[in-house]
Amino acid sequence: MEFSPVLVWFIVGLVMVLMEFVIPGLIVVFFGGGAWVTAILVAIFPGMPVWVQLMIFTVFSVACLLLLRRSLKKHFFSDQDDSVDEDVDDYIGRRAVVEKEIKNGTGKVQFRGASWDAYADEDIPRDTPVTIIDKDSIRLKVKPIT
Image 1 (spheres, rainbow, N blue to C red):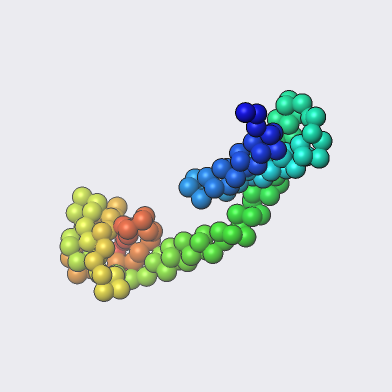
Image 2 (tube, rainbow, N blue to C red; image 1 turned 90 degrees about the vertical axis):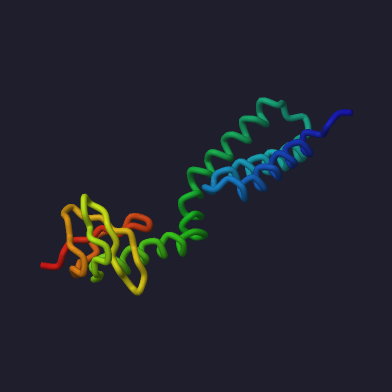
């Protein structure tokens, strides 16, 4: 049983578009689109050699990846990126109180009613007011208020 090149390119494109849901990064979808464009061109020009099909697939996929990825990523994922920046800005410059002495660089601070792991460049005694100068995931970098 012989498969139609149009069907093969369509299935390859479908698999790649579906893989985009599993593999993050907005990359694989462009290769899926390249496969679908190749399927359409093979349907229009049925005697197209395989090397030409591969060339069309590669050129179209890479060109779309280079030309469209950045703008599409900004369009679809801009809300997520902004929220990360706002989160960091919500912490930097705020005041907290040392809950567990920061000794040898680590300890805990009380901030917004919650206990946070904290680190500092110096030892800071308990109940000292501090300023948050950085946020590293779930750890806050602090310095004493002078």
